[in-house]
Every structure is written in C-alpha cells, then in structure tokens.
Amino acid sequence: MSFHWNSNADQILAQMVANTAAAIYEVCRDFSGRPVDEVRPALAARWAASNEGASITEPELTNVATLISQGKRVWAEADGRIMAHD
Image (cartoon, rainbow, N blue to C red):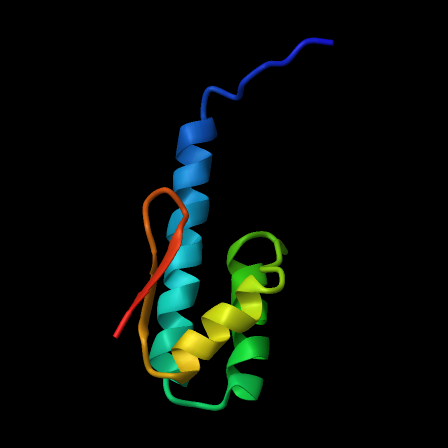
C-alpha cells in the first residue's frame, strides 16, 4: 500500500477551516441568545453547507450551540479548534 499526499492538502484544510469559521460566525450573528433548540439545527445545517456535507457531531454540536445560545463569542482557530469567550 502506498500513500500519496495531495500537494494542495494544506490549502484545502485551510479553506475548510475558513468555511467552518464563516459558518460559526453566521450562526453566532443570527442566533446569539436564542434557545439551544433553535441554534442546534441552524449550526448543523450551516456547518454541512460550508463543508460539502460534513457534519458536526455530538457532543460538539450541542456544546457549541449552547455557547452560542448563552451569547458567548465562538470562533474557529486556524488549526480548526473551536474556541469560545464571554
């Protein structure tokens, strides 16, 4: 078995993180302070739309939706980690 690294992998991953960051920003902007039951489906849908159908899984979906519902600032770091701040 051989493995061939895509020479554009770094750019592809950076674009995926940028897409995720944009989706999180939009959900924060549109749903901050709203009930978790409203934030969760919006976050799941926008995450999938921004990443070719990829899904955010539990417990991250509920955790991030809860932070957004609480009005916290949520963002994606360049390495893909999701962060939050009051």
